[in-house]
Image (cartoon, rainbow, N blue to C red; front, side, top):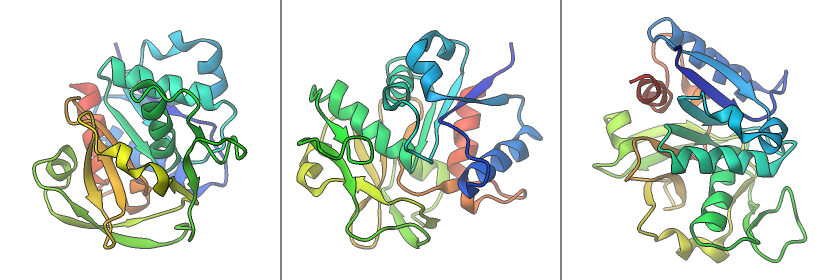
Amino acid sequence: MTNLIGIIGERYENFVPHSMLEKSLDWLKEEFDFEYQWVDTLSIHNDKSILHDISGIWSAPGSPFKSLNGALVAIQFAREHNIPHLGTCAGFQHAIIEFARNTLNIQEAQHEEYESSSEVLFITKLACSLSGTSMEVKLKENTIAHQAYQKLHSTEDYYCHFGISPKYLEKFQHPELLISGTDQDGEIRIIEYPKLRFFVLTLFVPQSRSTKEKVHPLIRQLVHEAIR
């Protein structure tokens, strides 16, 4: 059976992170035996069994999607079944909501982009948008991210307008999680679940740094883990 990576989200034709996401995977298909397909969030909301044949999940940027619940179901499925998972930009944000609801048991946890009137906003609009910026990320040694990069510093690109609310930052000092990448101000940029095979979340979009000769190491690691 062919290894299949599911890209969770609705594809936007002129959204550069989506085209670069596909290019990164296409370049790796020349080296690894796998396929990929977009899986829209409303389909997952209606029938999560469509996830059962997927060997890896990429929670994509580009929200708001049709169904926040569909995005969260895919993330929860990956986490509970130890399916290799990479969440980038919006995928990072959605995984934070999934963590809050299903690990912290804060069922009312919300994302401002979907429910701005909520009193429990774990994801809020950033005071300064990161869209179009590039920043250095410092990697924590002996983490999944560090093993993928094989170095301690990287420069990454951002397209996001939302991030973790400062009100809830202390919730992420949690035994299930590990903050494995921070920026120059100590802000969270990479989170991982260290007990899982590969479950990494980045607020940046790693695909923008991919080239045909050198696909971003986190994307390469996702594919490697999904097919082994």
